[in-house]
Image 1 (cartoon, rainbow, N blue to C red):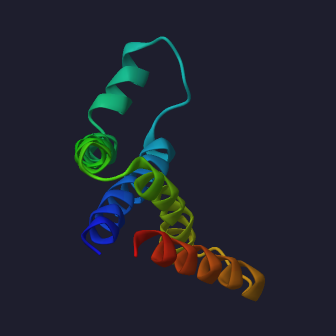
Image 2 (cartoon, helix red, strand yellow; image 1 turned 60 degrees about the vertical axis):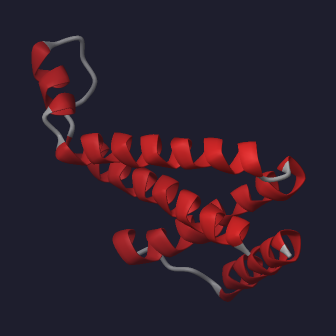
Length: 116
């Protein structure tokens, strides 16, 4: 169960990074090789927070794959789909159908079986 808890935290960090990246991209200027564009990138707090989430998630992933069997750890990557769908609903007001919920339940059950 420890592996499952670590994987949940790690996947939440990466999903949070994706959400922050989407917000950051919405605030950036259109791409150009200009000082203004790069300033819009590097003064964007969502972009910096996105990098922090990715960095922490990567460090946690290093710990997971070093200390747990790869055959158990890697399939838990699919938890990203669960957190991504929830984030789409919460942060971007995207509709989620019953079919998608059934798919998420299958993924969650599969992750539970793998982590046992």
